[in-house]
Amino acid sequence: MATWRVGPATATAIVLAALTGSCGDRPAGIRSTGDEPQSLPAAASEIFREAAAESGLGFVHFNGMSGEKYSHEALGGGVALLDYDNDGDLDVYLVQGAMQGRGKTIEDALFPPRHPLPLTDRLYRNDLELRADGGRVLQFTDVTDRAGFAAHGYGMGVAAGDVDNDGWIDLYVTNFGSNQLWRNRGDGTFGDITAASGTDDRRWSVAAALFDYDRDGWLDLYVGNYVAFTTDTNKLCRFETGLITYCGPLSYPPEPDRLFRNRGDGTFEDATALIRGAPAAGTLGVVTGDFNDDGWLDFYVANDALPNHLWLNEGDGSFREEALLAGVAVNMQGDSEGSMGVTAGDFDNDGDEDLFMTHIDRETNTVYVNDGTAYFVDSSVGTGLGTPSHNFTGFGRQFIEFLQLEFQKLKSRIAVLTGTDNGFNLVLGVFPVIVDAGQFGQQLVMATVAVE
Ligand SMILES: [Ca+2]
Ligand SMILES: [Ca+2]
Ligand SMILES: [Ca+2]
Ligand SMILES: [Ca+2]
Image (cartoon, rainbow, N blue to C red):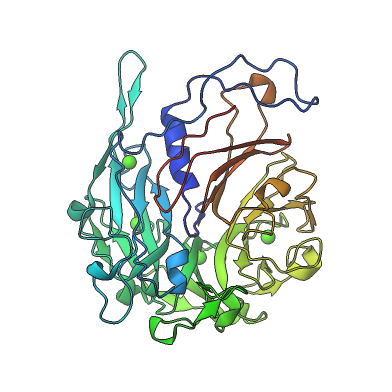
């Protein structure tokens, strides 16, 4: 299924890349909860090894903050893992920020850029070396210039998929401002086909998904827009103490999302009319999947501070919004949460797509367990994935089969990794085992996650 998901600050995908290159020592010393299998492996010092710099992934995100508290500075940038050169390994596309505000220059930045200028999105080619002795050396090469990228605007997220069915994966980049659709020419270069394809959206877009909702063999496009904020209309917001802070999502009107249908001739038509049954709600994440197992791709939209949306595909070219009845509009207390990122995966191995969402601090991450018919139960407490996240704001998230190579006894267990703004949590589903480690910050790099 050619479905790709993105959201802001999906740094967890980078961690996944590191994992594939270094499945080595067994983790141990995990605090026992008494109900896990008895033959846990012996001690080892680490599960993940921080390998960004040594592998050539020297990217550092720049958010352009100058003290104005522009809302989009707080979101970070997204990342895509894709095999753009069809050589069998995953390459990395990283979305970059920019200086913001009328007349502002790099000299106005509170924190000067740590990535060498010019600041732009970056594509890193994976030159993984497989040695005769079985060893492997993970090495990335910055091929941005060679690929011909000329990213404009302030980047938010990126979706990857083969939109023209030529066998080469293309990229759709969401920006604060106009978006960009990059066609992979198959020769190592990309061309901007945004205007010709009709896929631009000049609003503040964050999330995007490429998925074939009408099953005609061509990937269609969902673009999730956030709020009607501009640097010229920036408001002043304060904590109760009077300290100036970033304005929340409800300070600005939410922007409606867009749905584009791929005509298969290089152009897309606006199909937004199919999703007019729900109000705009400030989208930060979107994930696609067949949640009710009827053979048609549905999608779920994570909204910041307003109810989330579940769009079920009717199979006749229309969608119906079912989040409230399905139990995924609000949490089990009936509260709308500050939904930042969302991913879908069958973490309990019962054959359907469950949902995991990251939220702002003082809310928990949320797990919605699917009964197989797109009716969900908020299982954040029962899975042990909610409470540990209470003090953190999370954005990126990804289900990975983390322990499969490490613990034969735990073969089917699934871990959830979530990046936060002030730490990196490794939360093992099924077992109430929590590991916190590493400072994460704004850099989209791997954190060393040591198991104590
Ligand atoms: Ca590759
Ligand atoms: Ca293509
Ligand atoms: Ca289609
Ligand atoms: Ca479906």
